[in-house]
Length: 108
Image (cartoon, rainbow, N blue to C red):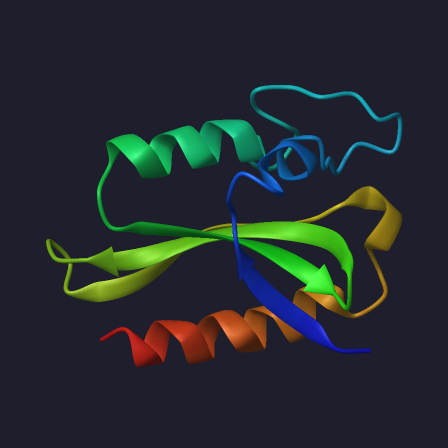
């Protein structure tokens, strides 16, 4: 199972904002543990420095992440990581986290 990080663009943003951690498929601005992907994407456009990526397993979008470098704190921050409820407990989060750390180290 290959996991990839891909840019969010005009081809996949709608799919990304409809991912949810809620097994009842409810969508909220703020989910139980994390802000929605729509709020996070909007935040990344207003607050400079955030990088948003869709998490894919081959051709299927399985999650979302937002990370960046804080000049103020002189460190990288992983602000958001979520895996859609349909794909949880399959190792995608662990693999995505490893990729995110590699991406952050490239951007320093």
